[in-house]
Length: 382
Image (cartoon, rainbow, N blue to C red):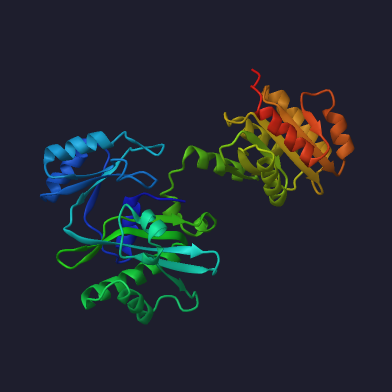
């Protein structure tokens, strides 16, 4: 789960991480009010969307007058940034930036620990730094049994700063950022950039946080901030109905029972030159209603040209799946081709039930996959 910059900054502030003064605005008039409230020579108008690249897209502007604040707010509100429409901005006090840095905590699957990442080259082009000068990205694995005590925080801080004032400030920021990461079950806490001002202060003028979805039940304050995208709404609805769904954007809708078989099915689709539209695991239940719900979910994706159903009947009974499919087709009245591979418990009964229907039956996984890929390469019949 992602949250907006202004929401992440609230968490930062609560955990003792210094941020500049800012105000959330939903209109250009509110932005002007913020300008008058701050009474500063310069402010920054920043788009609030759940994606990066706002600066390069024109969603971050430095304003030096009331007229500029109004004009920038009007131009940014409603802007499209990587498919996200800007519905709100923050107006922040501008600070005197001397230098910019990068710092984050992320989960490192390889070491099974939290990874501290830092760079003296923060800012919009941090990706270029990682690509062309990776030695400028400093990485430190955090032992979960030790955490980030004073001596380690200061050690890491000295790798970035030489002046004792900045070392002390940065060590405190590292400890508080790590504490926030752990206490809120985050998967990412990031400051880019962390700036040093001409006055010698370190301030987080940007903030980014994502959270572990599996731990959200422990954090109602975080859940309250959730603004799901259309795809996330679908995934949440699927979870409520008892199956796992992830949208992938391809043309072959997949319905499979079992996560391992689902992954193998997607791999085989790619092997034969197709593109899976989703990951969908209906689990081991024989409930026909679950099959109906899954079919409706797949067919609501307008990119899907064909549905591939790959069922291995261990616990799941193939005849129940066939019954669910026939019922679903009666309800949905779709023209999208459906390829079905049933094998396992009651597979003969299941295949027999599908005879005489519009469902295309295949006996092997390879045969079913190749047929589905072939259909996507033909014009969709309407």
